[in-house]
Image (cartoon, rainbow, N blue to C red; front, top):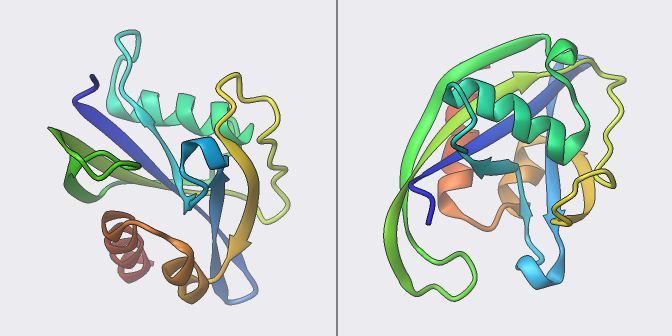
Length: 147
C-alpha cells in the first residue's frame, strides 16, 4: 500500500477571480468530487515530478502548459479508507497547486486507469460545497489564502 499521496489543485484566473478544477470519480470508486490525486511511484524522481505525471494522466494537462507551480500548499494524513471508512495505515498527503491558462483543454478520457466520469471548473465557494473530504477542503482553503 502506498505511503505518500499527492493532491494537485489546478486553478485558472477568469476575469478577477479563480476557478478550480474538480474531477468526479466513477461510482465504483466512490462517485465523489475531488482534485487530481495520485501516488508517488518508484519511477518518480520527486514529488513534484510525480504531480506532473498525475496531472497529465488524469487531465491531459502537460508540464509545458502549467503557468505557475505552488509547492507545499498543505499537508495532512489519511488514516481511514476512502470508501469503507475502515482504519488504514496512515498515508501522508502533500498538496501542490498549478495555475493553467483559461483556455486549457481537459481530457479525462485518456486516463488508462478509468477513475473519473466528469469534470468541471468551479468557484472556491462551489468547490468547498462539492468536495467530500475535509483534507481536500482545508487544502483548497490554504491555496485560496495564498492566492
